[in-house]
Image (cartoon, rainbow, N blue to C red; front, side, top):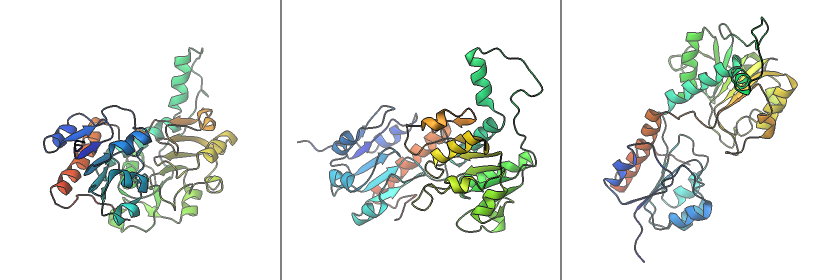
Length: 320
């Protein structure tokens, strides 16, 4: 049996990325926009020295067993890594990397796009026009919310959260945040730290950017969503932190004015309860979906693979 090429890429990459890898190594690429089925993935990883994964690829003991002891690196094409068992990889000496930093601007811009769409009811307006429903302008027609002077809360003040907060000043919005630790003033983008429940109680607009971990899964459940001011708006940029069923229920009851969600806990499935809400703006995981950013993400994943297979240190390693 012939030895498989040393590198597996589990998804088609942005233009110009894969060539940098194939110039140095033999590569097998699952060159479609669809994710690999689990059985197909486990068969394909066998004998590889490096695998470039996406969030849809679960990297666990079964994956590592299937790959074999020669596997050196799993380069995740994402800033998140909840699809990877870091402890299992560390036990076997497999390096794991992600792609932080390069998607900050695109994701922060998407958060603001969703925020504006939700507060100004753009989704409802477009659906109305496309449906051919008769309409006419009126003083009370599709009234939304203005942002100037509206308190903004940011849950998760990492790179993306800070970029969201920085852009809030252009909208004259006072900003508060909650993080595991209070940031030095020079890093806080003019925002004030608050305990979580105080942040929720004082945020008319809440943007969720914290990573999904065991401690943040369903952090915003029905009880905590009820702490928000009546008529608040929630923008979720991280799957699993907001309980999606509870979010739909808060919209249904009128407790929330609107919500926007960019990615979902069980993608590609979207809860029917959310789909039924006119005031929910729903995007199919577009936070980093610009040509420049996806090229940068793919390029960073490739750089990590090239460095490790050359015997060097990874650029953006993850530790358990």
